[in-house]
Image 1 (cartoon, rainbow, N blue to C red):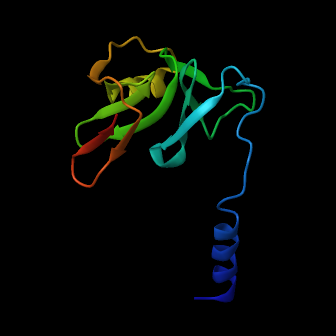
Image 2 (image 1 turned 180 degrees about the horizontal axis):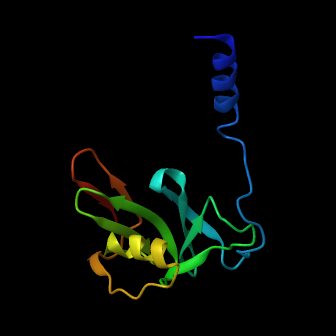
Image 3 (image 1 turned 90 degrees about the horizontal axis):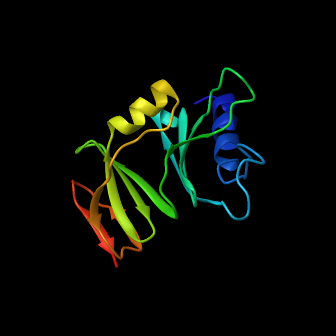
Length: 140
C-alpha cells in the first residue's frame, strides 16, 4: 500500500463521523427528521420525518432540488428494507407497516407521491431489528 493511498483512507475514516448538512431549511422543529436510510449505494436517501417519508437524490442535476414526500404517514421513527422479501418497512406511530419495494422504485423513477396501501404487521412496536437471515425482531 502506498503512502498516498494510506493517507487517503485515513482521511476518509477520520471524517466518517463528521456532521455534514445535506439540505437546510426543508424540515422544521415541528416536522423534524427521525431516521435516515441510504439506498441505491447512497445515491438516494430515504428520510423518515413526522409528516411522512421523503426521498432525496444525492446526485441532483439541479442544485435547487428539494426532498419530495413519497409516503404520507405520520410519526415515522424507523425505516428498513427487507430485500429478500422485496419489502419496505416503516415504523410509524407505534405500528409496523410494510410496502412493496416497487413503491420506492416507482418514486425514484417518476419523482412523485406514491399512493399505496400498507400491510400492517404489528401494533405497539417501539423498535425493529433486522437479524441475519430473514427474521425480524419486534420490541413492544
